[in-house]
Image (cartoon, rainbow, N blue to C red; front, side, top):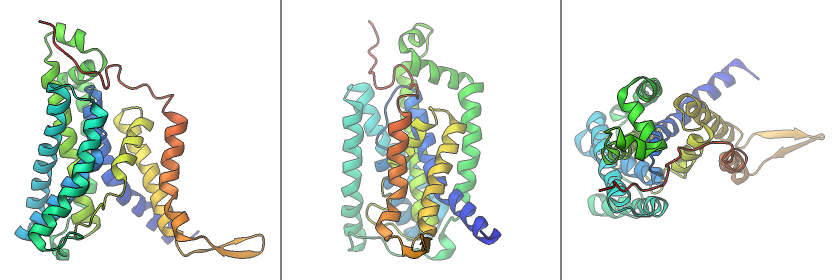
Length: 298
């Protein structure tokens, strides 16, 4: 195996893992506060579409990234209000967000660009191919510090583990949970924005292709901890990088040369996700209050 191939594979792994890291860190803030966030896929789609649209209209990828963050926070606020204020089923609310964001970008794209399939191509000079990778790496360190070295991180973990005790200690459970869910929207939207104005140069329908669910699997595999979650995302990024590199490559087996069909190779990251979930979800201890609505006693 040549050094060039290894270098390409490593760079591809980092590049493909970056949006997973951003979405998974977003999910970490939400779920550490006790709110299940299965809506990461929809939040990424919101960020991807908004970033591509605003970048195309303004010519500035930074304005597009900022708009994506606002869009992610807005969509996440719907999930937050439904789950925290009205105590809706958190899984159902998250899936509703995902279903909503499968359709809304196509509708808006048709209204803005007369095309429901994709937004117009963005010039290469208006893309951010590296910045989101740096942001993802920095946010892992920032999240670790916030979670384990700041009063806010202590309160976030306390609310996710024992909201009654946190409330007794004077911590606003509702406020902390709102912040956690809104942060998840912002970070997942950055991950989505990277797909449309970093890895690609336009938004296409369902371009996240299940990455939000893979990020959620990485979060579970990483036991809701930032560094372990980063490593899990790198594993999934490596799996996707390998699947890309193997497409069309002949493999010698028992004296015969075979070419594995592309659709089987493309299944590899998703099969790995299922294996990880099946093998490790039982050994990962979630925050005790995850998924449990909290009603302050009067």
